[in-house]
Image (tube, rainbow, N blue to C red):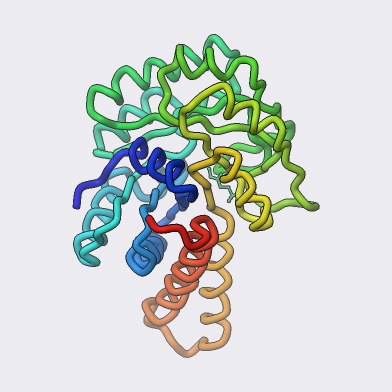
Length: 284
Ligand code: 13P
């Protein structure tokens, strides 16, 4: 089964009323956990890596591990390999050359004109090769990767149509009150803003910073038009907790597989739970 881009995957999700989970992975075991969850549920899944994960393990390793795990598991549901928060034109091109099937270019810290310019340069190359492009409009706060953004600038619905048309992006990450990382209190989302954004484009809408957002709020976002739902922190917490508990509880065991296998299972469980929550029983 080849990797697919996210365009058909997300338009099918919108048609059928479910959200597709996009999980950030860090290593072989998180990839195995996520692909295991996709196999168990039959759901399409997006596997994504940030620039710092790429710095850690390399584009070639991620592509190879994802492809090999898909073959090993004989996975039947669609899988996309996506660059999350691509920080430069050059990195997006490297991911495309490295056979990622989808890339995000994050120009959210630029002016509108410069964000459009950067995104359209990536789009013009990506689309030649059937690779999809996610862009960000407005600025999602919190800590993502090596970037800490204090102030989240909400997405302005009145510029959405222009941004999408001029940049040519396939999916739009929106700032509607979610934040990357851990929430200090209950997240407050601007549903009205999300509805206005939906009214101004038919492109896929992406929710970032979903770890820690209550299920009913996430499901409401899907009803209002979100089709890609990003999770990173939840998986990291599950992995690290399980690994730490195992090492502390069995200090006499030195085979890393003994410990890391439990971390892999914890990731798979969380990924399965999230996939089922996003689909609410709808068929894929
Ligand atoms: P969380 O870490 O809050 O789940 O955010 C993930 C994300 O949006 C990745 O881009």
